[in-house]
Length: 387
Image 1 (cartoon, helix red, strand yellow):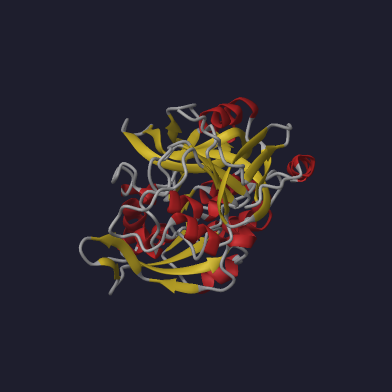
Image 2 (spheres, rainbow, N blue to C red):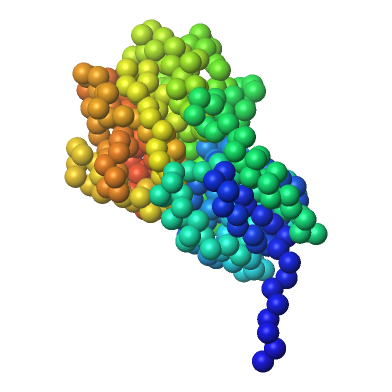
């Protein structure tokens, strides 16, 4: 049998510590720098790449079969990919799914996102877990010409996500209405025709499916930019305030978001519901602190325990910062914790309908384990309305 000769590598992943991974590039060509994380989800790679919470990050997928269902515009969580790039074990295959409209390679190329395949993702994942989320440079050159020293230097020059406010970069720039509901067979996405509750959603990097869940729960949703003031919120006379997911350091985003939340809560007793970064923003507004995690939580298989009911939910997560439960003030109760590491996953005020969770109930890995949170928000708004 003739000796197999591997083709020349066309992509390079350089870590700030000097570790180099060579592989096969696909998607766009060029170079990018970011923080490297890993995601353990077996499905949903398109939703992950378009989740604004992944701004400033390259995602390593631990599941090897990435790209096998292609892509479809219906699965985008925002207008275009936000994650800086992707790392996979095996090269994407031709899609095998009736919903696919485009191959992953072409989709990434069209949207200017770099990807690398053929890597030992288990080794890379172990490195992330042991060393913390590293800074990396990812390059794709069809000719295979790489300046390794320059790539390592680029990785080392990446400033990192601590102290970085990315919400402004991924947020909408002007307000808009949302009425599309959750996908349902056989009609797909239907439009809400009537609504019981007026909700203002602050867009720190909102995923579309969160807005769909709010609409499906009977909400008339008005989305405002991350920098919206309390006056902007209260001028709409909403029944409830929703705080969305988003990327970056919550303490940095909190410089303008926390005063807004505090003022709204001081001037109104409306229900408040937060998810992911919105959870962290609410915690900061209530007096708690947030801290950077070693490698964060990224995946669709995270068990979370509801401390008030004893129920365990299988959840989707994507966060690199967490609320320090030891800093929760009096009057704020921890409601959910991660069964992986005991970190905080939910809080509520004991005397007001104000609550939030760290995970993503709209992603539905359970698949319906956590939808009750949207129903709880709707019920809280209904109880505030006159009979």
